[in-house]
Image (cartoon, rainbow, N blue to C red; front, top):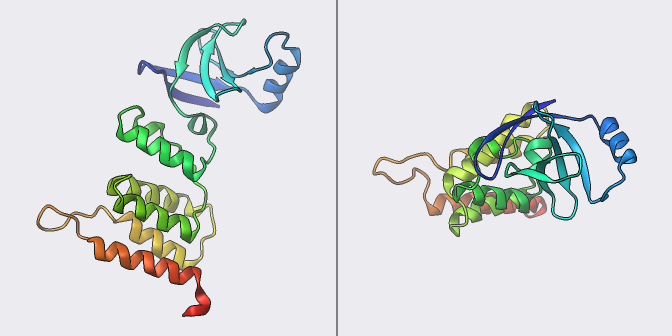
Length: 195
């Protein structure tokens, strides 16, 4: 598979990922430090490798001497769903300009009601922007064609996906009281026996 990624200095690099079998064969032949695994290569013959000690991706030669460090998250390169904590960190890096929107992982885990509450609370506490949370909910919904969600979960994600809808006076259409109501609805959904 072909993947585009970016180095720490912002240069775009195209890579062809190895199959698991090819990566395993290369690892079996490896005589140097077993801390590194080759997972792909580029058009000029550099290897894409992962440093198992820190999860960092980098381009290198046969001796694992790095030429370029990759800033694009491994979850994006490998098309993995990040953990909730990791996605929060990556979204914060996006806000700081350390990642581009296209570098955020596209694959998402199906959130629980508790996780949806956390994403709304990220807005209320200022940890993330409304736009960040709207984009997250949109990505989850976009995957919903492949996943089976219960009806209320889709409704809740639809609400969250418009959390950044502009209002008439330059503010947002949905106010703090609306976010509080969404949180309360989700909490009631987590305790169906109390309805």
